[in-house]
Length: 100
Image (cartoon, rainbow, N blue to C red; front, side, top):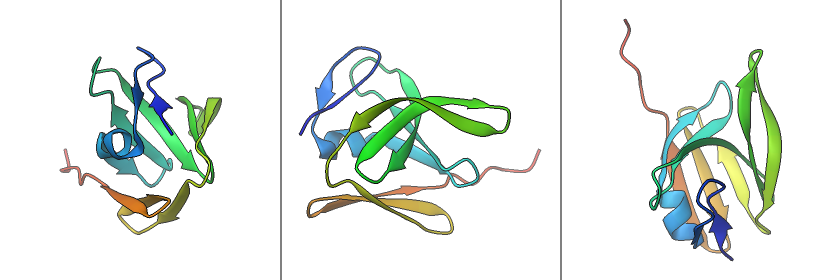
């Protein structure tokens, strides 16, 4: 299973793809991902069996493109999202922001 970057169309194995996730926004239920090849940054929603790409709009995230990833699972924690596929798993933590 190879997962594409929607900007440059490079394809990545699950470990390389999910290891490039850098931040989990629990309020919007979004994961930040940066393509290891082209540097494009996307916000995405991890859903059962697929990834949802889109953008925030009026306080919510509108999914406009979906990439099927059969067997993909997710588990929300207080300050993290645990992603699993087959026997592998990845943890994306919430980056704590400093008050202004």
